[in-house]
Picture (cartoon, one colour):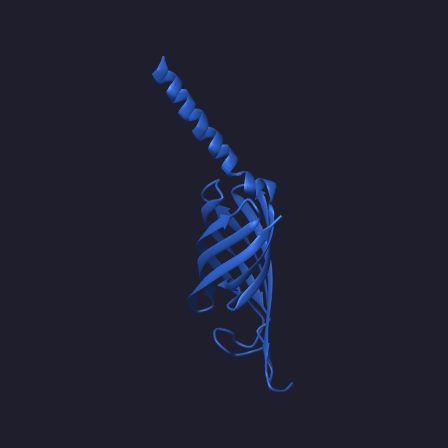
Amino acid sequence: MNRRSLIVLVLGVLLSSVALSAQIRAEKPNDFSLELGGKCLLYNLAYQRNLTPNFALELGVSYLGAGASLDDSVSAFFLSGGARFYMLKKDTSPYLSGGVVWVSADTDAGPFDGEGNFYGYISPGFEYRASGGFVFRGGVYFLIIEGGFFVWPGISLGIAF
Protein backbone atom coordinates (compact mmCIF):
# COMPACT_ATOMS: atom_id res chain seq x y z
CA MET A 1 0.00 0.00 0.00
CA ASN A 2 2.78 2.48 0.87
CA ARG A 3 4.69 1.68 -2.29
CA ARG A 4 1.64 2.31 -4.45
CA SER A 5 0.99 5.63 -2.70
CA LEU A 6 4.60 6.68 -3.21
CA ILE A 7 4.42 5.90 -6.93
CA VAL A 8 1.17 7.88 -7.30
CA LEU A 9 2.71 10.82 -5.41
CA VAL A 10 5.89 10.83 -7.55
CA LEU A 11 3.88 10.60 -10.79
CA GLY A 12 1.58 13.41 -9.62
CA VAL A 13 4.50 15.71 -8.84
CA LEU A 14 6.26 14.94 -12.14
CA LEU A 15 3.16 15.40 -14.27
CA SER A 16 2.18 18.64 -12.56
CA SER A 17 5.69 20.08 -13.00
CA VAL A 18 5.65 19.24 -16.74
CA ALA A 19 2.31 21.00 -17.15
CA LEU A 20 3.49 24.03 -15.16
CA SER A 21 6.78 24.35 -17.00
CA ALA A 22 5.13 25.38 -20.28
CA GLN A 23 3.16 28.20 -18.67
CA ILE A 24 5.74 30.97 -19.26
CA ARG A 25 5.35 30.80 -23.05
CA ALA A 26 1.58 30.43 -22.64
CA GLU A 27 1.25 33.33 -20.14
CA LYS A 28 3.67 35.64 -21.99
CA PRO A 29 3.45 34.60 -25.66
CA ASN A 30 5.00 37.79 -27.11
CA ASP A 31 8.55 39.06 -26.93
CA PHE A 32 10.71 41.86 -28.30
CA SER A 33 14.42 41.14 -28.61
CA LEU A 34 17.71 42.56 -29.79
CA GLU A 35 19.85 39.99 -31.55
CA LEU A 36 23.57 40.57 -31.96
CA GLY A 37 25.02 38.76 -34.96
CA GLY A 38 22.58 36.22 -36.30
CA LYS A 39 20.50 36.24 -39.45
CA CYS A 40 20.99 39.96 -40.24
CA LEU A 41 24.80 39.81 -39.74
CA LEU A 42 25.30 42.67 -37.22
CA TYR A 43 22.04 43.14 -35.28
CA ASN A 44 18.29 42.53 -35.57
CA LEU A 45 15.29 44.01 -33.74
CA ALA A 46 12.66 41.27 -33.61
CA TYR A 47 9.12 40.55 -32.46
CA GLN A 48 8.08 36.95 -31.78
CA ARG A 49 4.60 35.53 -31.14
CA ASN A 50 4.17 32.02 -29.70
CA LEU A 51 1.13 30.44 -31.32
CA THR A 52 1.49 27.28 -29.23
CA PRO A 53 3.99 26.42 -26.47
CA ASN A 54 6.13 24.66 -29.11
CA PHE A 55 5.71 26.93 -32.17
CA ALA A 56 6.34 30.64 -32.78
CA LEU A 57 6.48 33.13 -35.66
CA GLU A 58 9.03 35.95 -35.80
CA LEU A 59 9.49 39.23 -37.71
CA GLY A 60 12.64 41.34 -37.61
CA VAL A 61 14.23 44.47 -39.04
CA SER A 62 17.76 45.84 -39.28
CA TYR A 63 19.51 48.72 -41.05
CA LEU A 64 23.22 49.15 -41.70
CA GLY A 65 24.60 52.32 -43.24
CA ALA A 66 27.99 53.95 -43.63
CA GLY A 67 29.87 56.36 -45.86
CA ALA A 68 31.75 59.65 -45.98
CA SER A 69 29.50 61.32 -48.56
CA LEU A 70 26.27 60.66 -50.42
CA ASP A 71 28.17 59.43 -53.48
CA ASP A 72 30.28 57.04 -51.42
CA SER A 73 27.64 55.66 -49.04
CA VAL A 74 26.66 52.04 -48.61
CA SER A 75 23.57 50.78 -46.86
CA ALA A 76 21.61 47.61 -46.36
CA PHE A 77 18.07 47.24 -45.01
CA PHE A 78 17.14 43.77 -43.72
CA LEU A 79 13.59 42.46 -43.27
CA SER A 80 13.34 38.96 -41.82
CA GLY A 81 10.55 36.50 -41.15
CA GLY A 82 10.51 32.94 -39.95
CA ALA A 83 9.30 30.28 -37.57
CA ARG A 84 10.74 28.66 -34.46
CA PHE A 85 9.99 25.14 -33.19
CA TYR A 86 10.79 24.39 -29.53
CA MET A 87 11.83 20.83 -28.70
CA LEU A 88 10.58 20.95 -25.07
CA LYS A 89 7.66 22.54 -23.26
CA LYS A 90 9.92 24.08 -20.64
CA ASP A 91 11.33 27.52 -19.80
CA THR A 92 14.70 26.34 -21.13
CA SER A 93 14.48 24.58 -24.45
CA PRO A 94 16.54 23.81 -27.53
CA TYR A 95 14.89 25.04 -30.72
CA LEU A 96 15.14 24.91 -34.48
CA SER A 97 14.30 28.03 -36.47
CA GLY A 98 14.24 28.88 -40.14
CA GLY A 99 13.02 31.54 -42.51
CA VAL A 100 13.93 34.11 -45.14
CA VAL A 101 15.59 37.53 -45.10
CA TRP A 102 15.17 40.25 -47.71
CA VAL A 103 18.12 42.63 -47.95
CA SER A 104 18.20 45.82 -50.03
CA ALA A 105 22.04 45.57 -50.28
CA ASP A 106 23.10 48.81 -51.92
CA THR A 107 26.66 47.53 -51.54
CA ASP A 108 28.98 44.96 -53.07
CA ALA A 109 30.60 44.17 -49.71
CA GLY A 110 30.64 40.63 -48.36
CA PRO A 111 28.10 38.23 -49.87
CA PHE A 112 25.95 40.99 -51.42
CA ASP A 113 25.90 41.82 -55.11
CA GLY A 114 24.67 45.43 -54.96
CA GLU A 115 21.03 44.52 -55.61
CA GLY A 116 18.15 43.52 -53.36
CA ASN A 117 18.03 39.82 -52.72
CA PHE A 118 16.51 37.08 -50.57
CA TYR A 119 18.40 34.50 -48.60
CA GLY A 120 17.35 31.75 -46.23
CA TYR A 121 18.52 30.73 -42.80
CA ILE A 122 18.34 27.70 -40.54
CA SER A 123 19.36 27.89 -36.90
CA PRO A 124 19.61 25.35 -34.12
CA GLY A 125 19.78 27.10 -30.76
CA PHE A 126 18.78 27.33 -27.12
CA GLU A 127 16.31 29.62 -25.30
CA TYR A 128 15.89 30.54 -21.64
CA ARG A 129 12.67 32.36 -20.72
CA ALA A 130 12.38 33.55 -17.11
CA SER A 131 9.06 33.93 -15.30
CA GLY A 132 9.77 37.68 -14.92
CA GLY A 133 9.88 38.08 -18.70
CA PHE A 134 13.62 38.04 -19.47
CA VAL A 135 14.46 36.09 -22.66
CA PHE A 136 17.90 34.83 -23.73
CA ARG A 137 18.58 32.97 -26.98
CA GLY A 138 21.81 31.71 -28.46
CA GLY A 139 22.22 29.93 -31.76
CA VAL A 140 24.28 29.24 -34.83
CA TYR A 141 22.85 30.50 -38.13
CA PHE A 142 23.41 28.78 -41.44
CA LEU A 143 22.80 31.61 -43.94
CA ILE A 144 21.92 30.10 -47.29
CA ILE A 145 23.06 32.67 -49.85
CA GLU A 146 23.27 32.23 -53.61
CA GLY A 147 26.36 30.22 -54.38
CA GLY A 148 26.87 28.75 -50.90
CA PHE A 149 26.26 29.33 -47.22
CA PHE A 150 27.83 31.12 -44.27
CA VAL A 151 27.91 30.06 -40.63
CA TRP A 152 27.26 32.95 -38.26
CA PRO A 153 26.61 33.03 -34.46
CA GLY A 154 23.81 34.98 -32.84
CA ILE A 155 22.89 36.00 -29.27
CA SER A 156 19.53 37.54 -28.45
CA LEU A 157 18.31 39.37 -25.32
CA GLY A 158 14.69 40.37 -24.90
CA ILE A 159 11.59 40.86 -22.81
CA ALA A 160 8.46 38.71 -22.92
CA PHE A 161 4.97 40.06 -22.28
